Length: 370
Image (cartoon, rainbow, N blue to C red; front, side):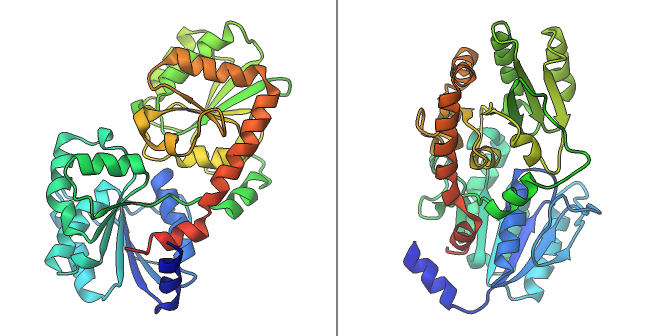
């Protein structure tokens, strides 16, 4: 990899087009934000967005050349506008993020005869896609030059589903260490202060069934029977909010589990916490997991059936892995951290050392090699 990176840095300034659904609160948009800001230091970056949000959730690098491309009930309009953009400009690299951008881009690029410049990226386990989406992937995605998977497990799943192994490559999600350091210490009148004398468990993600927060609440209920000095904070928003609140109230845990909602800067909360938990039952990588580990939080995650977290956490060395769907195992792993401050400190330090290697500078270069 190093020799290729060296060759890349000696080449001309690249003209890069990034295609994304939008810049909204969430992991994929964070990746787009980090990569485009890093790329613009050495290359010319243009961005095409389907959604026309007035305020982007995160800053981006480069110039937004298209925004608010309407869907109008089908993908034809998006294919058309991307086709026009590709015909008008001579891009060296064309990179899209997630299925909502991958599909219309690969069609437009084929029509514009520039599919050899296209890199598609897939950020979720194949288990999360519908049969229709997988059929679409296996039929059209091979038209692209490269297909990036954010973990080896995602790559394996894509190949097993029928995508060509020579085109599917693993590339990691970046970690902006400098940004995390700054935001974690950012003064804010809205910063929530966690109560002293309590062991604080924290989790972060979209309130969606795949994220497993219902299982985490069940695990906390079991733990709270014995450990009354614990509190759980969940950062995120989504369609499961009402059902999760109902479950919390059914367990009588309204004073001990807090749904904090979506926070643009969650890091001041994370640095106050004692344990981070990623209860996702399907996770392509786990950006929130790496960010929490960088802050020194000992982490527990479901193994996601050999998906993302298993490529970040080495069980008992830099974090703890529980078997997916098994609440009892999740309880056991969290309990080990509740009762042992020494273990929390050991795993926190080891976890931070692990994820520091995912720094955005090196990862951003790997995204341009295809």
